[in-house]
Image 1 (tube, each protein chain N blue to C red):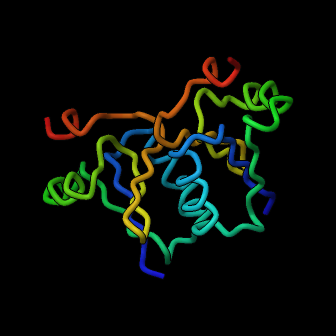
Image 2 (image 1 turned 90 degrees about the vertical axis):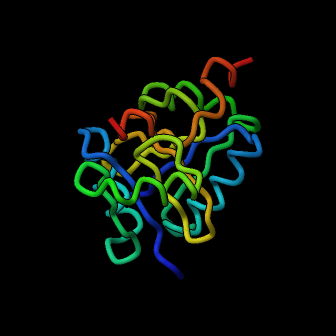
Length: 77
Length: 77
């Protein structure tokens, strides 16, 4: 199975969700991308359909938006 | 590890998310509750903090709201 990608922006709800996701799916199955420290990945995430963070993009390309923490527009600021 | 519980309401986005969750976490680690066929579980979900479905309640009690499909008010109708 390919890795899932978990995109977040370093907010408290994101960090909490990150821990849950890593526990549930397993660290080795998830790549974590933090826009707060890596804005270069934002365009890629948008192309994949990420509309808010935290979001998990599954190996088959589905985007699971988890909670509604920060919109993509906010992340860019 | 205790099971996670995935609450949904039978909507297309719920079913899609259900498949992703089952694939990622493993069927044996998730109990699936469909409000469309089991409204008796709605009160329990609300007590756990579920505000919209689909939502995944993790073994440690965190509620991950996935997408924003249908509010709990809509599910009750």
